Image 1: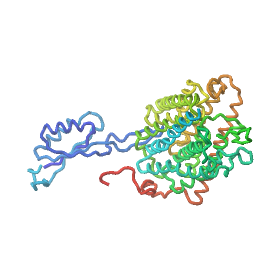
Image 2: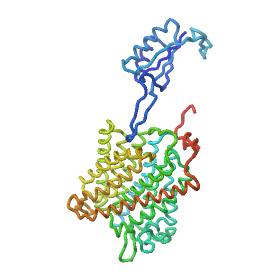
Image 3: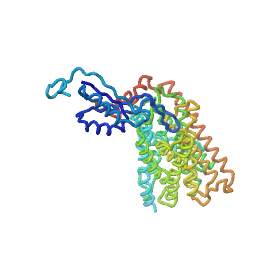
Image 4: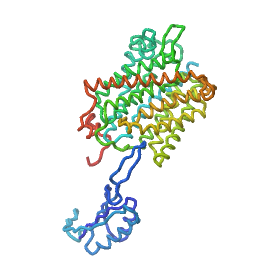
Length: 112
Length: 415
C-alpha cells in the first residue's frame, strides 16, 4: 500500500478531485496548508509599506491506494494539477505498512 | 424653527455616535488578529472617560466663560455637574445640554483617534490615565480656543483663536483632527516601536465597513455643526460627500503611480483623508472646491504615509498622516480657494481674497500642532516615568487581547 501526498495549487483541487473520482479512488483527505518552494513567497503593499509573505497557500491531498494503483494515481494527480507555471507543487509516495478501517476492524488491502 | 432644528440635531447626534464602533472597526481590521480587542477597548473607552470628565469640568473648560478673560481656557467650575442645564428653558430647541452631549462625542472621538498611535503595545490602565490627562490638558484648552465664540453683549469671553485670531475652522480641522494626529505621533514616539514584527491588516472588509460607518457619522459631525435644520446643514453634507469621494481618487491615483496598484486599504484611507480635509472647509468651498479638497487631501496623505518609516516612528495606524496632514491640507484649501459665494463667505487668495487669512490660518495650525505635540509628549513622558506605558515584551509577542483582556477575537475550533 502507498500513501500518495500531493501539494498543489488550491485552484486545481476541483480538477484533481474530479479526475480521482473518475478513477474510483474512493476517499481522500484535503488540508489547507502553507509553505514555499521554487515559487518563494510574495509581497503585499499596505499604505505604501511592503510586507513579505514567506508562505503561500497550498492544498495538500492525502490518499492511500494499493501498490498497483500507485503509479496511475500519481499520474492522474500530476495531469490534473498541471498548469505549467512555477508553484504547481509536488506529488510523492510513501510506503504504508498497515491500515485499519475503524468501523469494521478490517486490515490491510481490504481496508483501503 | 427650533423644533425642526432640534430634530435634525438629535439625528446628527445619533449619526456621530456611530463613529465610535466605525473607528474601532476601521482600526481593528488594520491590526493583526491578536490586538484587535485591545483596540476596540481603547476606542470605545474614550466615551467612558470623556463622559465623566465632561460632566465634572470638561464642558466648563471648553464652553465656559474664559478664565481671566484670556481666551485660553474656560472657567472649570462654571457648569460643574451640568446643573444649570437641568431646567427646561422652554425654547423648544437645542439647549445647553444638547450641546454638552454633542461635544462629548467630539472630545471622545478625538482621543479615540489618538489611540491608534499606541496600537499593540500600551497598558490599558495607562491608556485610561493618559486619555483623562490628555483630554484635560490638551483637548479642553484647544477646543475652548477654537470652538467658543465670545458674546460681547453678555461680556462672555470665548477662545482666542476663534475671536482674536479669527481662524476659519468649520467643524474641527484643528482641535479635533490636527490635534489628534499630532498627539498620536507624540504618543507613538514616547512609546517607541512595536517589538514584534508588524502584521498585515487582518480584515480589510472590516476596515472598509468601519470607514463607511465613519463616513456616515461624518454627515452628523459636519451637518450637526451647522447648528440647525438649515441651508448650511445641507451644504456641508454635500461638500462632505464630495470630498470623501474625491479623497478615494486622490489616494488611489498616488498609489497606482507609486506602487503600481490601487488598493482597498488605500480606498478606505483616501475617503477618510478627504473627510478630514473637508472638516475645516465644508462651509467655505464650492462643490468643485470640495472635490479639490478631497483630491488634495487624499493625494497628500498618501504621500505623507511614508514619512514615519523614514523617521523611524511607529505611528501605527498613520493618524498623523491621515488626521494631522489631512487637517492641514483642508485648512490650506480654505486659504487657497474658498469661494465667497459659499456660506462662510470667505474669498480664497487664488480668487483675489485678502491675504490676512494666510497668517490667521497659519497661526491656528502652528498653535494647535505645537501645543498638542509638546503637551502630549510631556504627559506621555511623565506617565512613562511613573506608572510606565508599555506592556512587557513577552505580552507584546503574545498579543494584548489575551494578555490584557483575557480574551481572543477569533476562535479556532481546535484551540
